[in-house]
Length: 177
Image 1 (cartoon, rainbow, N blue to C red):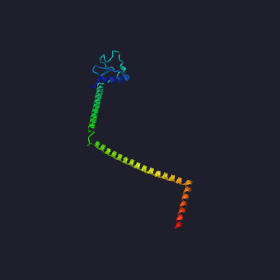
Image 2 (image 1 turned 45 degrees about the horizontal axis):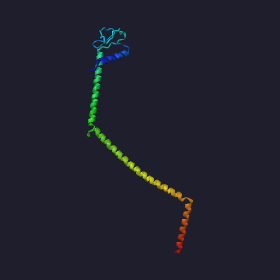
Image 3 (image 1 turned 90 degrees about the vertical axis):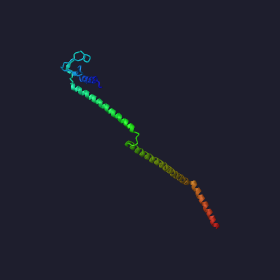
Image 4 (image 1 turned 180 degrees about the horizontal axis):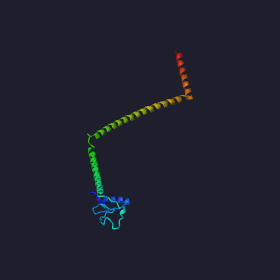
């Protein structure tokens, strides 16, 4: 049930903001601007009211405001009820395997699992390639160190002495034959 006094209080506030005053009749309709009608003493004070700033609201307009508020409130209640039922339906059908949403979810999970497996394979392949690259780098460094070592003067002299010793030994063997 709509509280009509709430509607009237709202209307009164709007009119007061615009600088107008209103009088409420015993039937709940507004009157003013030259219309003489007895008002309840508890609603309207007994002081003199300036009718030059009073607003007249017809009974039809007031009824249209009442119906609009009641229909909006009913519409809001209806949409809230529909939304609540929709949420209940979604919650109930969430675990059903034969719905379109469940099929989409299963398809998405399959694709995600496939992507995860491919990513795991790529990671494993990257590890193997990193080991191969590390081994090649180690070989290149060892060769470079060996070349640097062999280019030192002491090593060159030792090699030439060894080569000369082998040549002399070979020559002696050839002479004995």
